[in-house]
Image (cartoon, one colour):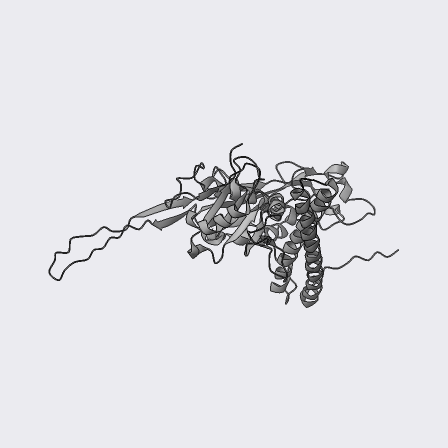
Length: 411
């Protein structure tokens, strides 16, 4: 029996098909959003009567979850559609860090990131070399941070990157026609060094596994390494301690471990009144805490759980702060500013920092050193072939004035 495998969509046909899917998802999202608002109105009436119907609560939670899932799917589809449009002429697929795939393509067909592979053990690769089977692999979900999409990225060719800051201080004065002009104060400078840390993977596979695997392990492993590296980077960009890894931006807040690292000071925080609840006015205050010079490209970042809470908030006129996207390529907004879902952000809890707002392209700098390197080693551990893969990357806050963070109250 002949088996047919779907070929990936390419070029202009892919753009049209994905745009159609995206339009359908946006339509579903807006229908769910209307249902959410209607159900929320029912719940508000119940609360006014000091009555809490568990049926309405359950319905509201389910719709809220559906809205979150659809919005996340739309965000992913927007990114995919943009990538296809960029590469429509040649049918190329854009990934967040293409050097991962390119480096692995150049070296091998292979196996698995966290285990040595061999055909003799099913869980270590034997699944991949049977007589006949379903030639697909279902991946366990890993949530990857989109920080590279919203931050500034600097590629360097040395061991580090040093940034100079103008701390101001230039003085002037008013004088008469013949009054003496004494020397005035001159601006002072500060500096901050961004030193890359190193991230590595060292997967192994037997030579027979490389020879006999029935799937395209080259593409699969390239994506595995890309995903794993991106996941680890994402966590470090948010909360990394700077030891052999980037400095997380949350460590630069007032009172944080790196509050004094940047010459311009620390990231200002807005204190919430409660430990487990957020008020709409607190988000509005966070917006106005940011200088107007940085609001044009400002955005919110928070995780999905926090978005589910913020989605229920209204302003003083009864309008919801959160609004779904209505146009392909546009994100959801809170109080008119786009939202980026950041899986590594903390949940709402006592003393937590669950929400940040600001211009992250001007505020956070990612430093890349040379890209990914792959060392193919078939000698050290025969019959296994090791693929030692490394990347050096650093990061830190380059301008704390462009970011503001909401801090929950103590318990």
